[in-house]
Image 1 (spheres, rainbow, N blue to C red):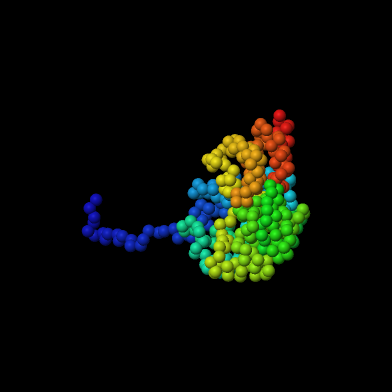
Image 2: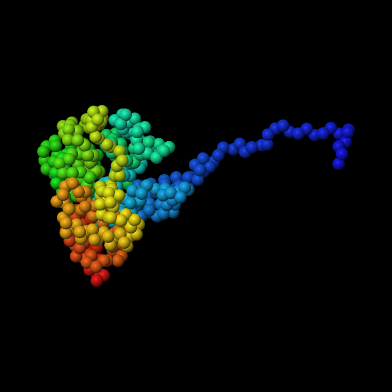
Length: 393
């Protein structure tokens, strides 16, 4: 239609198209992580009240993140599985160690002042955090928080984190724990690792020259007899134990810490400044055992491809146990402690459940024998597997 010469054409608007100026929702900001973060709070709450089974059930609702990768820390799933399935038959020190892990999870989110101080201490000793090994683009604080031995010691003990957490932890857990309030006050110590058997390890307290025999839960699995370590040896019902795996250090460092326990941070800092080998990072802190899962696997199995094939895995495991009894590997102190690795494997819930579900030939006698030589709590579950095999025969 031709335009009228008398009608003025409409002006085109020069204003840009109207855009949605509303602020992004929390879900949009988090890029799909909002439901996972909400679920994390629910899992934390379940674990704090001592409901390991409930926490596991929640985790299974969203086991994998939006990127398809496992969303949860695998060692947390392992710990919850052990508490949910073995819980009623575990020694009370397991509850004490559980409270340590809960504190480490809770304190950063609750803005405990010790968190920032612990990070600063680690940075001062390491000369900064830039050298912390980590994937490209990952914040080094994450690795420090999860895997640094010094950060753990500083946050829980030196800067009051454990004492603070116990004041708001579930009362039933605190009451059921083993000497947990004595753990809060346990000093750092220096030790020499002396000897091992399938059920015990022997240490010398360098402050007193006292020989201390403790249950072999793998605290010395990566040490050679005669080597030294620092750590906190804490009281339990039947003696003492390390509250977590001790840190291997040169003899001079261990003796200096034994002589001045409150100066252990400065002692480590000075040792690193002198170029001595003191590595506090890269730890995988244990729960029922101090043996890292991958160390146990490498020690026990020739074929690592069978680790997720539990029927084949337990067959290979039984062969390894029989070979251990024949060869008595503790005679060689240079060899990783295979007995501690065997105990760690028994305490893997998937391995235990597979053995219990389908007893193997000869399992009754073999596990009755294991139940006599290993440390608790693994020994108890070996005896249970022997009974299961006898009843299934």
